[in-house]
Image (cartoon, rainbow, N blue to C red; front, side):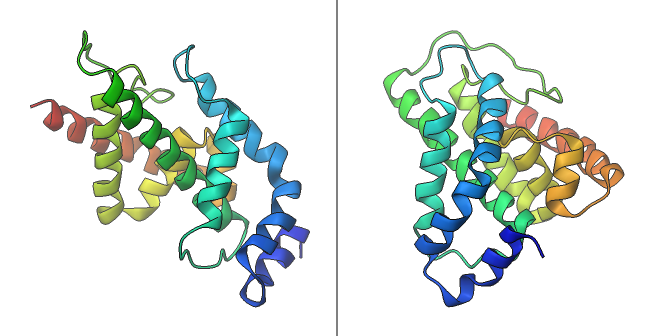
Length: 187
C-alpha cells in the first residue's frame, strides 16, 4: 500500500485539513506539473500561475462537505474538478471586466477545446461538461483530467484505473459530444 493510499484510507478518522497537510507535500510537484501543463495551453497573458492554481484548488478541496477520497484516482479527479472550477470562475470574473469584443469561432481539437480568449465559449464548455457528466460521468472525468488537469492518455488511464484504449474511446466520444453541444450553443 502506497503512502498516499494509506493517508487516504485514514481520512475517515482524521480532519480533512490534516489529511491534506500530509498529502500535498507528497503530491505537490505532480499537482504543479498538471497545473503548468494546463496553463501552457492558455493564452500567454493569463494572470493565473501554476502555483496559484494549485493553491486555489487546495483551498477548494479543504472546504465544503466533499466525501473522503477513496484512492489516488479519486483524489486526482477531485483536484482536476477543483482546478476546472478555479479556471471557470477566473474566466467569469475576467468576462465581467471585458465583455464583447471580436469573437472568433474556435474549433474543437484534442489539445485545445476552447480558447480562453473567448470567455463565452469557455463558459459554454463548462455547461456542456456538466451536461455530459449527467449522461456519461466517466467520459466527463476523462475530459476534466485530459483538458483541465492536462493529463496524458496514459496518466488519465492510471488516474481512473482504465485502459488507455478506453480513455482514448471516451475522449473521442466526449469531444464529439462536446463539439455538438458547443455548436448548438452557438445557435
